[in-house]
Image (tube, rainbow, N blue to C red; front, side, top):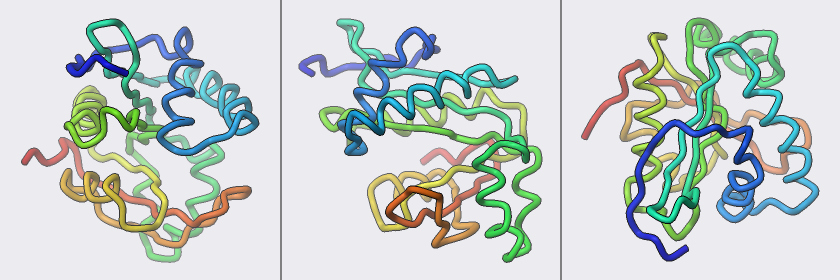
Length: 180
């Protein structure tokens, strides 16, 4: 990608799902089989009440990054997996009245430029819920550093999702998110 400036704006992710998943594949290291599975998941998520999606759009119209999320629903798969981990720490109330950041990915060419920060603060600013939750690979990384700088704290660690090779951390933050 050669465009350097991006604009954060609402995006019709259903129409741009393949482009978004191409960004995720590069940013997250997904193979073609994983992308095919995630395509159906993304399209299903976008039908959920309150789902929002934003993109980081280059001047040439390319998607440099994206985020989507929705109000949490305890009956959704993600919630059913993380709930026992949160309950063990007495924190399962975080699953109520929370906006979930379902996916946030930035193309490596645009990482370290504030694009991820712009995406996550823009989407959470649109939520009228009092808090946000997300899951991230449970290792120290630039993504986890970003989340901490925004006010997210670890609610549960070593969370194991079926078929995920590495454990995750569940993080939560009050809204609005911290600004620098």
